[in-house]
Amino acid sequence: MRRELQMNMLSPPGMLYQYLRAFLGTRLAAVRENDDRGASAVELAVITAVLVALAVLILGIIVTFAKNQGNNITNTTVPNPADGNNN
Image (tube, rainbow, N blue to C red; front, side):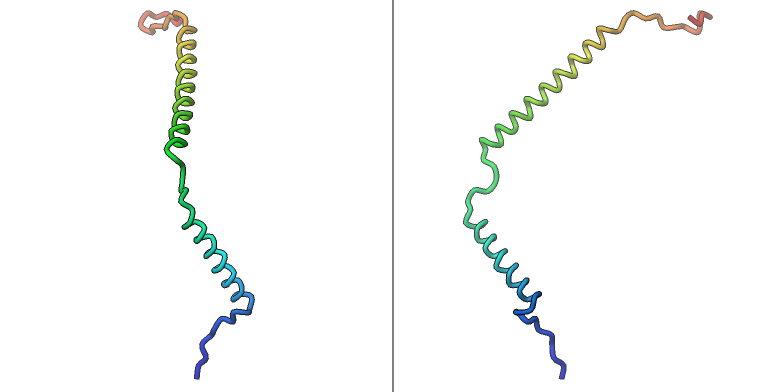
């Protein structure tokens, strides 16, 4: 007759299983009791406002930089190879 292996609950793997089962059970019960899940609408609105303000600030910096670079460009003469001048 073949004996099937059974986990001895007092052996280290059995004790670990029992501990994990009890630990996860208490954590799941705490999560189920807690009605506060996630951020509220006010928190999301504040986060969104801050992100929009940062985006506008970065856009302003980029536009200012581009305008300054455009103003720094002077009238330059582009050489025309058809004229025969290499200047």
